Amino acid sequence: RKEVEQDPGPFNVPEGATVAFNCTYSNSASQSFFWYRQDCRKEPKLLMSVYSSGNEDGRFTAQLNRASQYISLLIRDSKLSDSATYLCVVKPVSSYKLIFGSGTRLLVRP
Amino acid sequence: DGGITQSPKYLFRKEGQNVTLSCEQNLNHDAMYWYRQDPGQGLRLIYYSQIVNDFQKGDIAEGYSVSREKKESFPLTVTSAQKNPTAFYLCASRGQGMGQPQHFGDGTRLSIL
Image 1 (spheres, rainbow over the protein chains, first blue to last red):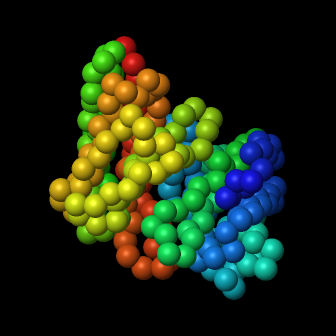
Image 2: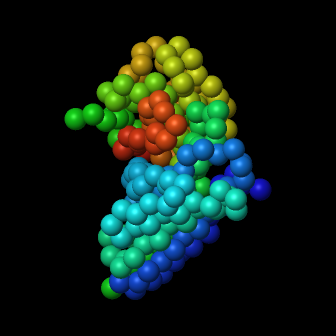
Image 3: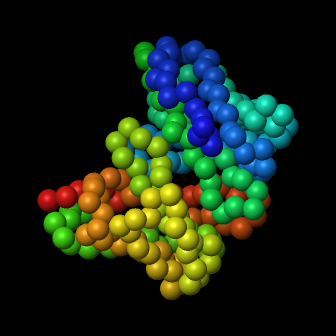
């Protein structure tokens, strides 16, 4: 089983749609969680950290469920510019390594 | 501006040649990382360094070597032993603290001539 698992997609949605991505992680001792965005042929960029109580940044909402070892990202009112691959990232406690999921690809169509 | 600089942006390697990819950061971060990404695939960790003069192998270290003589610099050498070096190479750094994310350079694309 992979340490961090994501549905690879692609998710193909119209502009204005709401879309949700899920991610599961296997190490219950994980302490930090992030969502990154990666555009084609570019480096990953931090989208948002994920906090235990859930957090929101504009159209983006992240949730963490430690009991189920599950992280989610909700994008409301999708824009064409949201088309990218979204990477779920987990940092286990006592490790300098961050574990990256393989990513979920989102395509927003006009 | 603070950030991570990778050079060159594009690099071509001849058969049997070693090449070195540069990574410099001015974020005062202790930890630095090298990843490899193949087309349509996720990131795979090559090497990482938690502190100057110390580094550890990641998941795919064979055919690669690194050094960490300065806090700001973490160069990666792709040796001739790496038989399939064509990929996108990403360097990252991370500050201390529980919730600190990684920050990435804009990558180096390596191809075989």
